Length: 122
Image 1 (cartoon, rainbow, N blue to C red):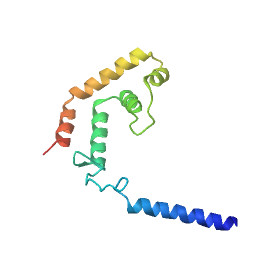
Image 2: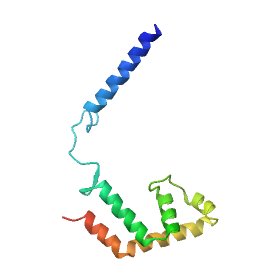
Image 3: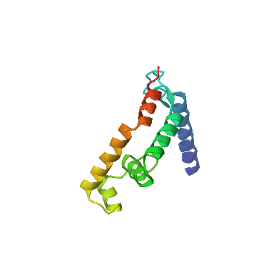
Image 4: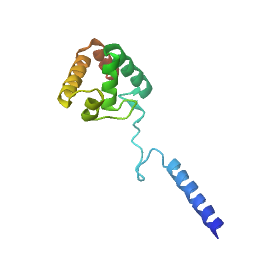
């Protein structure tokens, strides 16, 4: 009897996977809106990722880059300000101020404007 139940469970799993594949791009039977979810403003995500990585590597020091990526969870596990302060032997207030400085440098850098132009090109 157990073999019948195992085969039944396996068949159900297979059918669920088939149903998901047939309904790929739809949600609860609603037709797909045609939006490419693997792009950002019409640019392929891998290109945007490469440009962001180049931007961060060009503007920031290694330590600043690591702290920013850990705070936002970019290609690593996201950490809170408290965790970053503890790891870097700093206070939460000092770490928050440091993150603000890093973000301000990124905002004011010329390469950031180039990335914005790339994303919002017409």
